Length: 249
Image (cartoon, rainbow, N blue to C red; front, side, top):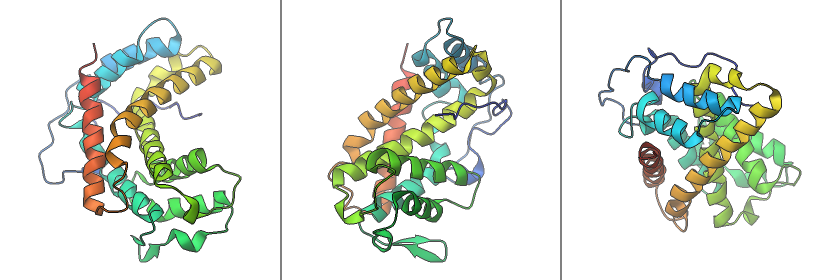
C-alpha cells in the first residue's frame, strides 16, 4: 500500500482532537497525557520489526492511550463522517452540495473510472487538513469495489456495492490515521518486505473491523435515510470499534 509513515508522527503535545476535525464541536476535549503514544509505538514497532508484538495489543494501546479512549478517539473523524455521508447519498442518486456546485454522479456516466473517481473525490474533499486523506480514500474505495479499468456506470452500482464502498472508504481513513500515529515505529521494519507485510496485516484487521461494525449498520438503509442519520451510523460504528479495541487483552 505504501502508506507507512516516514515522519515522526504526532507528538504527545498534539491535541487529541484537532478543532477542525471534531465531530462534537464545542464539547470540551481532555488535555493529552504525556507520552501517550509510547505504548502503542513500542508494541507496533515490535510487529514491524518481526520480533514479536501483537497488532491487537498495539490497537488496544492506540484506542485507550494514544487517542484518549472510546469517548474521545472517534470524535477526530468529523470531516470523514461528513464526506462519507455525502459519498453514500451521491452514489444512491442524490445530488449533494460540493462547494459552490453540486455533485451529481449521473453526469459522470460513461467516463473512465479513474476520471470519474477523481472528480467524485475532488467534490467530496473538505477544505481542511483532511482533504488529501479523504480524496485518496474515495478514489481507492471506488477502485477496490468497482475496478479501475471500467467505464463508470452509476446506474449499475448495487446497494450492497455502495455499502462495500463506504466500508472500504472508512477502512482506509482509519488505516491512514493509525499509520500516521505509528510514526517512527515503522522504521523498526528491517526491510521493505517486512514493512509491506505489516501494512497489509494492519489494513486487513482495520478493514475487518469496519466490515463488522459499519457494514450491517448501513445495509438496507442508505436510500431512505438522511445525511445526519448516515453520519450517526458511521459514528456509531467507529464508537464500536474503539470499544472493541479498548477491551482487547
